[in-house]
Length: 180
Image (cartoon, rainbow, N blue to C red; front, top):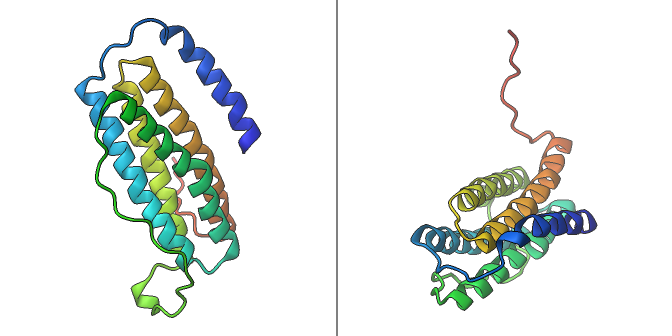
């Protein structure tokens, strides 16, 4: 996933670069709101991943959740924080990271199972793509558009991995086929 993303990241950077020269306008209210809420959503998703890593029984799912956290959400969070700090935008309040542990003793009715964890992550990734698309279309500054474009790419690639995992386990929710 990494090498492919680097080529696409370079392409996206090349597309946006001509529009990033010159004096930058201040962020507008929609850009600030979209960036701020995306950071909040990323932090919340990371808490869900931490819980999922603690609860997942399947080692493959546990590893996928760790990989998505490390290669998608931590870089997104860090880039958003760095950008917002440079622009003087305060961060949303976040909850602390969940401690790592093995929580097999939690009763089945009080925790998500692997199928539910995988589907929740798939949904979160899809909603992240949708919200980043909104941020991209509502951005005026090219650097904001570039940031949301990279987020879309990261989340789409992770979503494809999660969909393959769901499909292999026959957990992928597919609408009925259309027969005219």
